[in-house]
Image (cartoon, rainbow, N blue to C red; front, side, top):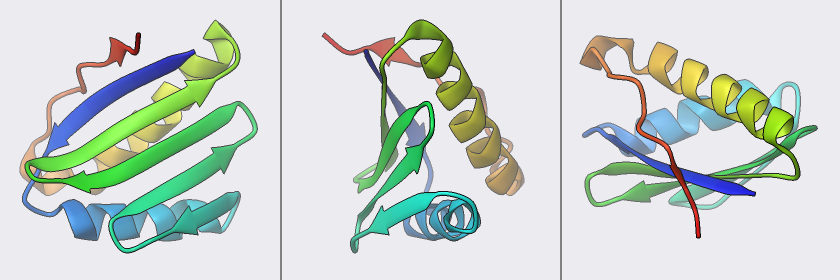
Length: 95
């Protein structure tokens, strides 16, 4: 199963770098210039710099794993973006 969300920000590159460095201490993280893949036990989060901010794609094999993955990624992103007074992400199920 797959879910997507967009996070509007002017600091997309900086937030991507912060998330990647933070998680790289605990899980396998692969990064390129404008995107990163975070390999969690419950699934994979792909985060990319987009024109208006960050685009997130989560892949998990079951609903419980998806819920855990979404919670971990979103809570960390919102924490690292606290200066922007961020709103919770609007996730959508990918077709």
